[in-house]
Image 1 (cartoon, rainbow, N blue to C red):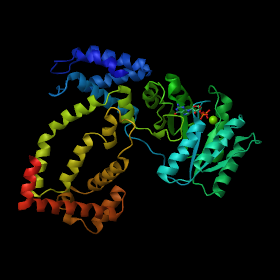
Image 2: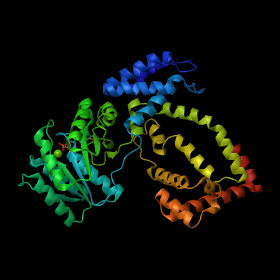
Image 3: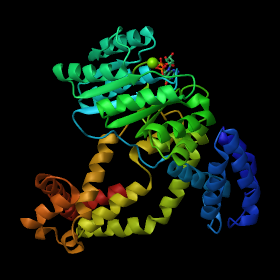
Image 4: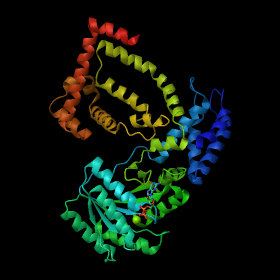
Length: 435
Ligand code: GDP
Ligand code: MG
């Protein structure tokens, strides 16, 4: 993997006090080579190296890590950016119509079943699967089987050869079955051809999908990127499902996908089974491509110590119990700097598949949004927060007034606790905690 290749180049940076263009040159050449051999598009690799260089040069080397490790961290962060920052959920709309497109064998039918399962379990949808592959009866059977396994509505017609008719009746059948997620599985070809595109366009015009998901086989590498670009230009895709990431696909396809096609990767398939499917997490993918979690977190730790002063200042405020919402916000942002909760776990070698903390993360993001909607004065004097101010903040952060109240209540309790800690018992406790 990338890291092995980088290792040797970066070792030369040992003992360097400051990263400079000269001492980075060799390492960056290796980075570029490694990216190319991981099947990353050459343009993407070139831009990537330029950005990493910009980031690295002039950086002081942190005391507790080697320059090489620090560079890996920078590379990791840039990889995440390239892959598309956070995970992207599908639109929150009911009913939601999704059309699956892609080449033959890319995993459209399998992914249709997986997506139905995901949306039913995680998003509370009632899915219906509509078989629009009019060329292979076996494809219809395959989808029907998946629908049966997932316990969702199925519509297919083995006699009908016109996808538009199938789409229309599929919508009707879904409506009658009270489904609010309709997934249209379409036919593929071995390569993109005009007939295929025409058919997809006609189906699109008939069913008016909210999402058009391109299913792409990661094992195709660079070719998958070309396919994505082509499909997007022809029918306008809203997202990509990257499949077969469980194989020895090098991940390079994922890297170029977004910057070349400009369509975000939304899901990934990691096996043949129906639960081997998840939202696409750029940070986990970056760790996977680098094949190295521990280095990244090591550097983060080192950077954290820079914030040590800030932490001590905060602890002092807590002791004096004059901790306000502004402090609360700044503390939360510090935690965020260390990466998302999920990614922290994902960084631990061997735990990259572990699902954690999406709920916690959402909660934290919401809390942050609420506080950010307050004025500085309000953050410093939470007692100001009532009536129309509460309403303004709720509107500003897209929550209900009761959510703002809940946050304030939680904050007040925290303050009370701090005050209690100041008393005799508290002091002893703090001492014990410090020891
Ligand atoms: P379609 O022609 O695009 O509908 O492709 P299918 O859904 O029929 O899938 C083609 C083959 O790829 C099947 O054997 C699937 O089991 C397999 N497949 C699909 N997704 C994945 C995946 O994420 N990992 C692996 N290992 N196999 C997959
Ligand atoms: Mg199929």
